[in-house]
Length: 267
Image 1 (cartoon, rainbow, N blue to C red):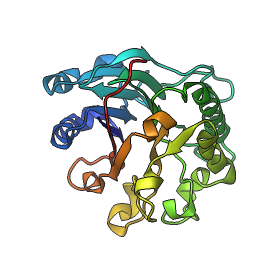
Image 2: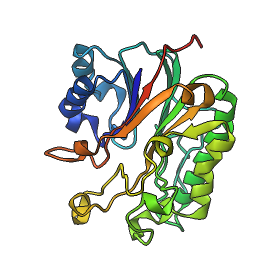
Image 3: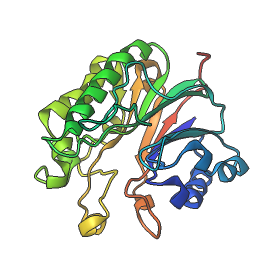
Image 4: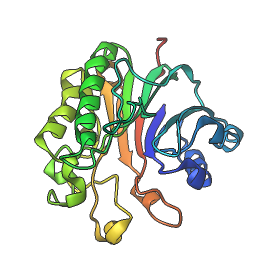
């Protein structure tokens, strides 16, 4: 099975490009983040015409997650237990559309869009850390089945995963607290697979639109696939599709693609 994750940065703006890539890459399951639409606004027809079922979770024009699958999609849930919410002081706390779980081809897939954090003194940074901590805590209970935690983690876990640790726009991505929260998934029974297959530095998944970051090679590796042991044991390859950052209408992120050997199991 071929499983991919991609922060598409508005699916309505990029539906043709995403579906075309799905077919060219022969991807079976695609977890998408930052779809920026409600379920009734999602372009289902284009995916269905290509042979994919889609589960969508979106509340407004921000955030949003989705999963497209041509190997089945069952047991869909739109948040994980104790998922933190966010609200500015004086506003209601809302559990945002940042997590979507579904069983696809015998694998429990979670499409995840971790909060950015915004700034070290911003309440959103505390929200980011809380989100990661709660997710790792509950993910420990899923680690005995084939489970993939995939998406935009908004953390550069090593210095080599960012073009410059002094980048002002990535302060919340490189703190010891954010990195510790990212690595906590290892203690919960998961392996982050990009390091196994792509150990070399400067292998990025995101380049900001501003300041010509992509042609300058100034990116970050912040999109990841964490796999439970039973799934990690079946992993045979992982690629970062850098070329999808090129051309007209590209997202600022690119797909991360995992190949899994053997059939899934009944969950």
